[in-house]
Image 1 (cartoon, rainbow, N blue to C red):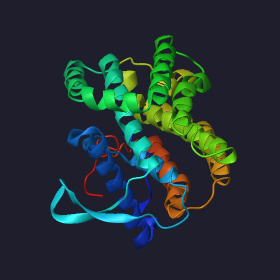
Image 2: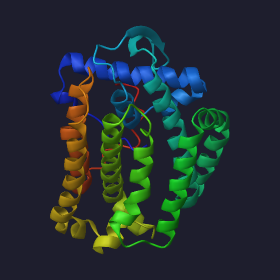
Image 3: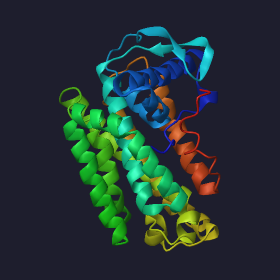
Image 4: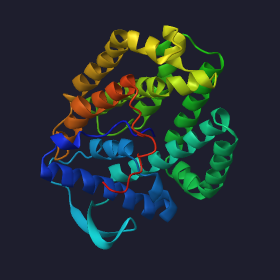
Length: 295
């Protein structure tokens, strides 16, 4: 996805950091097992968050030592496969391919060429993911079409523009658990989706304006420069805070797991920090680093 859903590492305890790294590595190995070696390079911080969120067992997750292509001289500790990791892996591939299709519409010649090449390379993993989770695949495709239509009409309402992506994120957890847990997960992911969409719009605003591409923040707040963006910081912060508060409220309805301290770190510190960095114009290459193998 975008690389904004990441923890503040400096605020994690050592055992929490090691567990987060195990979740990241566990998702990577699930991708390789379910969709082939190439798929492991789509592993992201965003989907690691989903991986942790889907773990319902309140006990400590089972871990195992695995070989890692990025660290061939030593084994890495990885969380063992679960039903949640299989869904997170499939969602990783589906979102990655949707992002490539989006690049075919919005990017320049070279990036379009790269996107076409990668789509060919990921044809088989995408087919496997779509076959394993057909309903999720259809929802993602449908919401992406809605998003493209809103972008084409240059929708002036941020709420309308953010709705397809937020609903797409909520669809990732539909049917997970029962009753209250399902509803809480859905609300949590919906509002996180809104924050991601807002953060990405703020992050991309200068580039989008320069290339005359649709940007929901630029259209909604009539912003064209970084200075104008900074002048609307309070309004943008209120928009982000409203969704973050709703996400935190939904999270309170979930039972605690071994990953809870990490999830709380991401919700309360990591995502707000990414939004604040976007407001300041500190892009920090978040998207480019989302597959950072040094974690």
